[in-house]
Every structure is written in structure tokens, then in C-alpha cells.
Length: 399
Ligand code: PLP
Image (cartoon, rainbow, N blue to C red):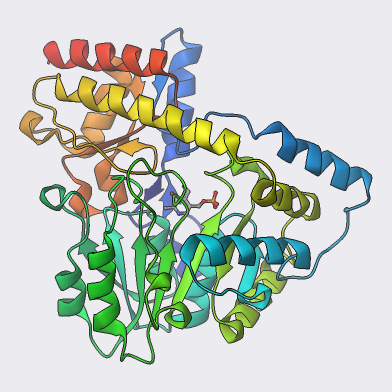
């Protein structure tokens, strides 16, 4: 994923701010893995954070139909009304709140919602809390706009849930945004309703503070029901929900996501859409309506398959000496602890790639509290996961 280290200033043509922007490391690992494959090595890919399933056929058919029907033009910046209506209906039902289509902004993937909200709400010097380990774009974008990143640790002893007391303790007059992510990437940890209540209570009376609730994995859940902080009394207008189609419908390449937020902010986020990309792809938007309103059986099947794979990888990792792995309740990542081996994260990534033939991401690429862990994505077949487990065990035995 992102590299939290600062990017070198490579050329005098670049503006200073570019040195503050993070970068993706998953694609670097993928490129290295592909180079090794070219040399004849067998690599199992557990580095990439996207479902390995194909987009369901009904969604593809809807896109083909839309293309033939002439959806080849710009759309309103906030998104096609019918899609915003479908999203409003879906979010109203799934979160138990009343969402109006004017509170929805459609974006090219869920990712721009985080960048746009940070751009729209955070002034240089403002503080932004975010989960650590967490999706590296948060820290990258906070740094990029000159905000002050305030990491909130997600610790294994707490099932990789943040401790709401850490948020309360770190609140200052400068806190502008709190980013939550449940289910979490890279740990698979979930926030409970009680966690969310405590967080809501501590920010309720703060007028100048928003929550960005990244719920992109809300449907990839193996236990219980998804809880959103926006569902708690008084919290809807203080929250931006980030969600999308990439993970739920295996649509990463389509680039379709959305933010749900109060109307005045939605107008501003749509204005950022206008400035950056004009709108999301028209055909993709029409396919998004089918995704939400068509049959959901493929999603159910995909989640059941992920659950099977989770059980295989967690029990397999726990059988390998010097590794231990908690059982994540959502998303499609495991975050095993390799502290007993005593290797630095990037060295472990290289060891796993070069000696075991397994591509992974070091936990530390998701923030300093990720040191001593590695992220495996189990968006790969049970057969390949089993193969990876054997390869990891063999390589570690030879250490
Ligand atoms: N949020 C989290 C936590 C993610 O892991 C990802 C993708 O990996 C995204 C948001 C963005 O997803 P997309 O832009 O593909 O919708």
C-alpha cells in the first residue's frame, strides 16, 4: 500500500508539497513479484487488496446496455440522480438513517472521498486523527495539505480496535477531523457499537469537527452487523460516510465510490469533483445502479468464500512456529505477528518474497504501530493460500 516515508524531491520542477505525498507500495511489491516470476520463480500473491472475483454478470450487462444507450457524456458532478437515489436508499436502509440524494456525492472510487474531505475541511496546522496501522492514504493526504497527523494506535491486545479513550485524550481545539475505518485495512479489526458511542459522546458538542467514517468494507463482514457512527443519535450531520463498489462488487477497476454527508458539504465535495475529474464515468455509474438494486447473491457467495479462506489462513498461520494471528471479523486481510522472529518489517517482506515466494506487505507500511506484523490479503484461492502457508513454514524453518 502507501509508503509512509516522505518521497524524495526528485526534480526542481516539483512543487515543495510533492515531498509530503506518500505512495503505494503494493504495486512495487507486485512489480518485484512479477520480475521474479519472469525469472522462473513461483510466487503466491497475497499483497494485493482487491477481490479476485470477477464483477457479477448482471452489473457488466448493465454497463453494456448503458454504453449502447449512449451514456457516453458528462454527468452532473455529484453523480447521476438515479444512482444517487439508489445510494441514498441503500445507505438509509443499511445504516438506519434518512439519506437524501442531495447528501450523496459519487466519486471515481471511494478514495477521492478521503482526499476531498481532507482538502475541503482541514486547514494547515489542523489536527486529524486516524487509525495506525491504517490505510496509508490518510496520513499521506493529511501531510500533503499541511495538516497535523495524530495517529490513534490499533493494538493486537485490543483486537486491533482503537481505544476510544485515546481519541478523547487527544482531542484539542485544533482537532478538525477524526478518521475511522471499520472493518479495518490492514488488520480486519471492527469497532463495536460501544466504541462508537464513546467516540460520539466525546465529539457531540464540538461544532467544528467532522468524522470521516471509511466503511468501504462494510459488506465484507463475517460476524455481527455493520455499525456506523452515522447511525447514532445526532451523528449523521457530523459524519461523512465513505463507501463504494470496489470491494463489495469486485469492481476495483471500474472506479466508483461515494460519500454521504450533509448537503452543504456535499456541494463543496461535488465542486472538488468538478475541479479534478468533472464526474465519475457515466457507464460505470449506470452499472452502479444495477449493483445496488439487482440481485445480491454474488456478494453473499463472495463473502462466504472469503470466510472459508480466512479460516484456512488463520489456522495455518497459527500452526507455524513464531507466528501468531488473530481472527479478523471483516475485510479480507490477516495481520499476523512475527515479533518473535525479530526481523524488521521490510526485511520480512523481502524474505517472504525472495525465500518463500510469497508476496506480502509489511505492517509498518501502514504506520509505525504495524511494525512486527505483515499483511496478507486472502483474496486468493484456498489452494494458493495453502501453498503459501507451506512455503512460509519451509522458509522460516531454514532461517
Ligand atoms: N478505504 C480503504 C480502507 C481501502 O482499503 C481502500 C482500498 O484499498 C479504499 C478506501 C479505496 O477503495 P476504492 O477507491 O477502490 O473504492
